[in-house]
Amino acid sequence: IESDGMYHSCNLISINLVKIFESENPEKTFEEVVYQAVDMLDKSIDLTNNPTKEADNASKALRNIGIGLLGLADVMAKE
Picture 1 (cartoon, helix red, strand yellow):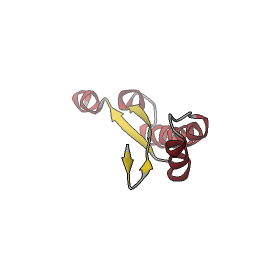
Picture 2: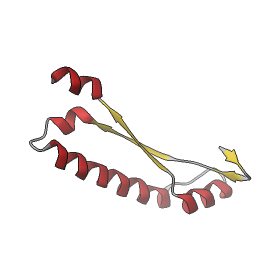
Picture 3: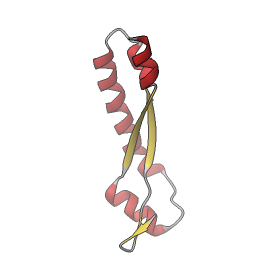
Picture 4: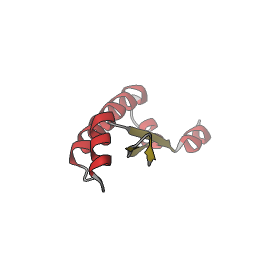
């Protein structure tokens, strides 16, 4: 995506809430998984080969990441 002369990219990951709520301590598990996800995405920025030099520069400068959640309806249905 280009805006203001910069090309942007974003590394993404999804967290499965069903697996989180199956653990003995969901709050602690969620905290650990989010921490690991952010760390993994941040490290992946340095390993990613972007299609253009501009996108690579913007990616390393801005370090955009995105974390999604899935399984919320399943968790709520079980409760």
